[in-house]
Figure 1 (cartoon, rainbow, N blue to C red):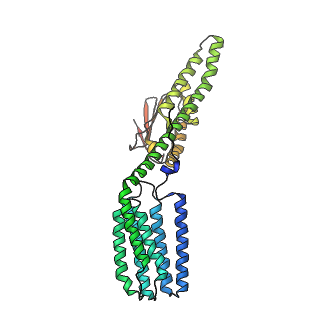
Figure 2: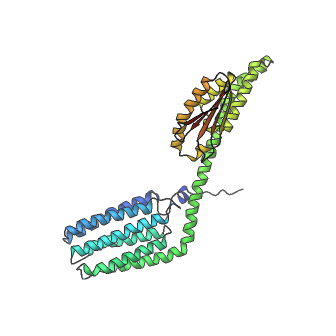
Length: 355
């Protein structure tokens, strides 16, 4: 009996440092941090420099947390790491600069902000940006060593800061050991999303195919049952069969144009003897879904109007391949006159060429 392996969606669909739970945890941490800083400021009687500087540092740290948490696996680039690290260094420097201006006898109220910098460095390390995190940590430590002695506090360097640096070193050593595993997890997350998208596309294509076959069945079945009952194939039966074969071909060759108004307009035009060819080379698949919908909402009514206006002749509608300009073309041949209408990315007419 074959064994079916299954994996929880969360294992691959969420980034290592992402997800609702961790986001809520970070928000909770920021709330506790704010309360701790406020209580320290009130209990130790800090001046106005403290309040302005700590609010600025809290905002910078909040921005750094957002930069670290937001990108999906594989999307946390070096630029994101540098941005987050820059915010952390700025917050560290602002914290110690504020302490220098404040000239308080103790830096206890500043300690939660100082420790938060190392929390963020650890998070950046676990987002596979070890070198960037350590560059920031060195710059932040340099600012600490330069500004700390000028704060007026006797014990500006505390055991908590030493512990934070030790933790950073331990995490660095651990990350060097498990970095390949973290990379594999990120790669699996990306692969899972790609497979899920492919499954969704396959399901959508299958659903579209079944709907197309159902529509054909609804039209063809009465005709075939009539032939079966009468035993005679009439000229109208032949016309319907040819129209149905052409409609089936349209659904395969031009899925982007396969809408109810278009199908009916094409049926009416072909019934009048108009030659209609629909082609879709996939240019719209590269656009965002909203842009595709906007493009078709403009293009399709124009196509329907062109088809309904023809009593004879030929119409060829084509969606161009990806990256081509124009995005779509409609060629109409009628009584020796050939007209080509080109449509831009917005779905509106970009140019009309007459031959």
